[in-house]
Image (cartoon, rainbow, N blue to C red; front, side, top):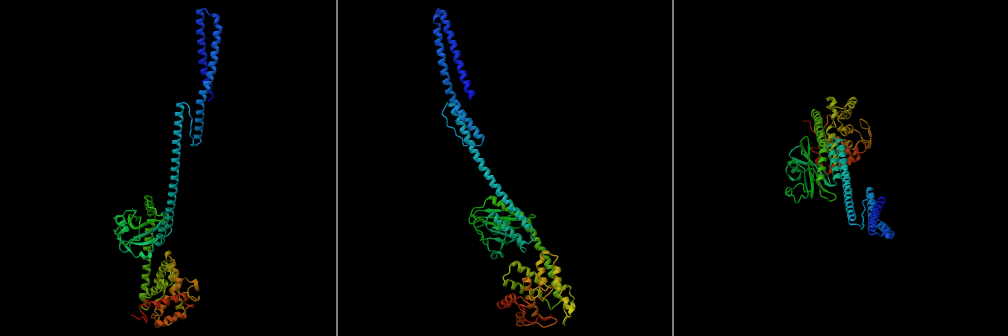
Length: 500
């Protein structure tokens, strides 16, 4: 700005001096023509005086113009430097020449636009960060769901994991998973649920085309309904009244086949579902479908294996008319005791399977020992006592029957530690095995055997009481006696079981 000021001053000064010189020459020529040379010094002095005054005036004028131009430009430069430092809080107010004011006004407008653009960028960055965080969180949930469901082949565990994690990631009040019924292919059955009492609806089936789930099964497409009570498709629904308000329903597809439906109902926050929620649930379903398919296949293979082993056990019983229907009776008593004692459904299922297979090891025992009418010799008795361990060994290769195998192995252990094959005592014996011992012994007591007559019901009850806390767990005996008193019809055949 100093160079600008100096150049302005010098330019005006040169113009003034040249003007004065020209004026002086003009007067000098006039003087020569009029022969007034004697007045020349005065004229020159006057001209010089005028030039000096002009120079002073020029200096003042140049200072005025320089300040009027220099000050706003200097502020403009400072403001530009501030903007370069990303300080957009700049606004200039200067009253000077119109052109300069227009320049300042344009600058202020530009700064305001830059500031707005900066704010927009900041908001967009925040939105992108939020979206990225949400997406990362969602992908993390999907990854965790995939990892968890892939770590198990048990259908109940897989479905429970999917429903819990889905409810967490979408913040749901209700999440339910329905699978195609094993018997009727065009029906759905609720297999797992969060937020509703499964016991009230687990026996309920939904036909294809019926209600929300049936509609999704029939149409093979996902839906998002904001208000079930206003949607004409579902106003008349009957069995799925536990769903209210907003719902997302997505078909579970594996290998090109619909195997079930997953329903997400109402957010805990009260917010409405968005399209992003639907897309997320579809991703979760896609990630989970194969795990569910594998669990269903694994369940089917287990059932086939158990049925095969049970058929062998039944064949064994068929050979011995004295023990015919024994496994069926033991299963009925043991399951009833377990329910009376409040065991979980999964524990009861293990007991059920173990009871059906508990005498499987007798396949390796000679028939003449099993059907011997007289008393067994010590060697024969030792042979009989191997059946519990042999049964466990037959089941052991199938990892999913580990718990069943342990109960089969322990079902002849005694509460006082004098049982076989491991002489376990008290609480060291698994509860399921203690229940099986009571059920097995009771059925044997009231059944006819080659070596003795059947006991009456009262005699059998007396034996249970007498051997409570020695052979039998007193807690199990107490539960069974209470059960017999409340439900005597649990014994389908009382008294001796005659040979056919």
